Length: 322
Image (cartoon, rainbow, N blue to C red):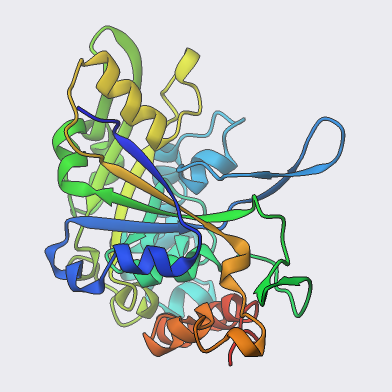
């Protein structure tokens, strides 16, 4: 028996690469998600580091609101053909003729909060997104050639999830691709934390979104990113479980259902910010810059996007080449 979540502190990003070869992609056993983490102001007004929760952008953005994701779908997404059809963005990308799932996937790539979380089967792509929101640095302190631009306790996180075991434990259903199905059948995806506790999350898994969306030509970005989508809505997690994230939900579910875990389900790789930056010249032969490695493996903005988002993410690390 072991813990469902295993934390792995990596000295450098190379340790993550060694653990996660791309030869495993086709098995579709593991999905990855990179998160930059960041700073918040404490009660004294000072900035301090905080790891981002594994939670949807919708639940994060609307956490103090009564607005529900099911309402968002029925009141906003379903209005695209009638209310938003004259927007140039909608016309150019044929969103008014797409099904609801296709519309949601497209819009969330342009910053609209949803309860779907982007994952990828490609570990290097997750690594790219993990550094995408680190503030760029053009120089700073070094120690034995290693950059010390940030405090040593600042790290980005790459989540690796065994989706076969996750589905088995939580009994997560595959997403139905029928128009209006997500809105009308939202309760179908409900999972209670425990039989005698009136708190539940809504989960769904889509491991092959490319074959099901009907605007593949318009949604270029999704086709390049080995995508998988995990829907998680914690709106109906109440009381002690309010605003719970996926890690917390999984641990509580296992506890209250008295389940035994033989292998971890979620692996959390914590990788120092500083390791993402290039070393000084005399040490670079043994320490390839991360951005150079990602470019060689076609996992930077020019490969993953066909719009300004690729440049936006790359700007932080364009200068971190040989």
